[in-house]
Amino acid sequence: QLLKIMGLMQAKARVLDTVLQRRDWEIVQGEAQEHQRIAESLGQVGETAVSESTALIQMIQESMQVMQQLVEHRDQLQHEKKALNRGVLALQAEISALKRKMGKADQEVIELKRRDEGHAALKERMDYSIKTLNANLEKVKGER
Image 1 (cartoon, helix red, strand yellow):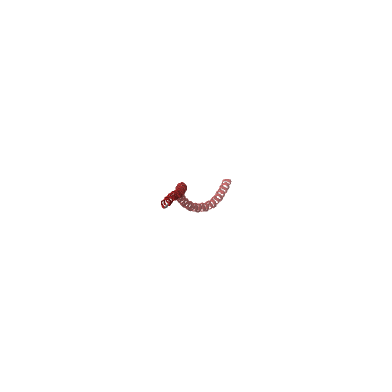
Image 2 (cartoon, rainbow, N blue to C red):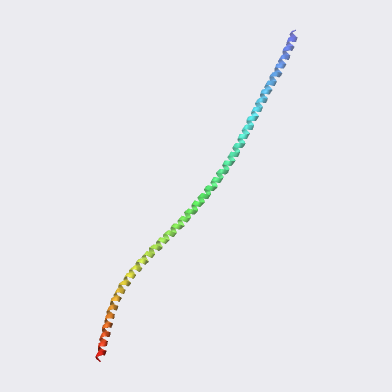
């Protein structure tokens, strides 16, 4: 009977061992499935991160191009500003020269007016002298 009990116990031990092995296998299989789901989820997260990183890199590159264009435009505007400043300085110099010429011309006009006044006075004296001479000439002609 001891052998029978031992045989039953061994059979029970094998059944328990099989049950435990199945449970362990189910647990391992469940954990493996959970790990696979986690890995897939991480893969999706990774793909999303890569996609978002790629989009972010593209946006940064576009921003850098826009900034480069702005820098080039700023440089062009500064060059144009310098050219305009040179033009303004040239115009200011020309205006100063014209003002000097106008001042000289005004002085010449004043001098010419003074001379004209002198000439007008001389003409009046000459006209008077001519009238007087003509009157005297007529007088002399009349006496003859």
